[in-house]
Length: 94
Image (cartoon, rainbow, N blue to C red; front, side, top):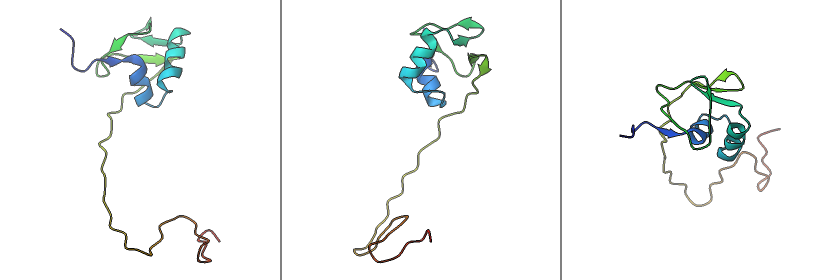
């Protein structure tokens, strides 16, 4: 029976900010990734709560995915929302 916490290794690496999924696949193919001390193979699935993943000997610490919050804002006509605006001669970076 498959564990509901299991995820593909390259997806886990991408979510943790190690590399993109494609780059993670390259690292796995090059033998630079180990799971529980054993060289990883493409297609391996891991349990991020139990398995130890290392890339080039450095441990990847598991950080849960953050919950996204979306805010809807009403912006009346004529209001400009920007970091730098030259349309009206205003530049806040001066």
